[in-house]
Image 1: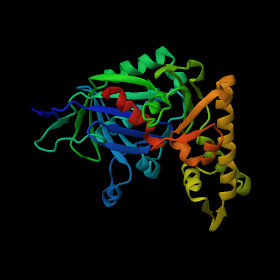
Image 2: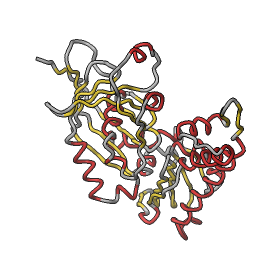
Image 3: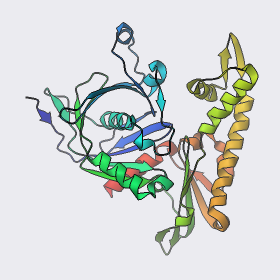
Image 4: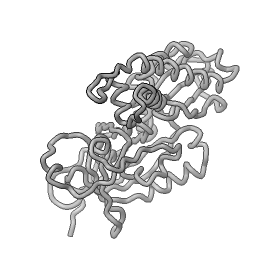
Length: 345
């Protein structure tokens, strides 16, 4: 009979499954980030045994008591070795069949699991906080559907061949993105309208509050999502490459080119830095214009704008396109860190 070991300390997990990266933090100090990419895992072969790198994860999941076993390559390993790589492209990314694989892997990787004894290690039912784009979160059907699904999720999860961990959640909170990042703002002013812009891979979320006599009120008309983000950089690089060579460029190669500024093709190095610089400026301008238009006449009366999300790191021009803008500490982690505060308050 398998023994279940549980951690007696109450636990909480915050998992931000983004279009680009999954970020997760736990109340026990765990922290992990990896690309939100999966691929079905085949049977391990000799090459798997020879590869000793720590790139990405091989995740084995068994749902329920007699449920089927799924095996996935997750993160960098999916990008490196996956043959049917799956990205989260739809706004309703939580309905993607591989969403659970990413979320469960993050849950296991952010916990300090007990090592002693044998059998299945347990998670002691932590509370879980996840996020949705603001406009998706407003849809009660989507929000409550995700909450019910995660509350009923029970699985045995093994990462990279380690002992299986039994994962269940005692309570599930679904929080709007950007509003989560707001909880990490270190220096809110004592009055006025304050806004937060959260730039992700595919979407940008806006949230705003008005502070009067120390009390905060949500400005609902300034809380929304737009369908623009860092993905535009990848498309710009792919289009420029196609224009110069006539050949297609895989998305992962495009991301690597965004980071390095150049790539080798048929023995020749192609300098993409000028095209990337131009694309960064154009995407930043498009995001700022659309957000400011969404704020309408209130845009001129915003006292402070905070910038969050991984996209802020790749679009430095954004800081100059909003009034009195400041980049949050650890902007890529802002939502996950804010989600954790939801449970800890």
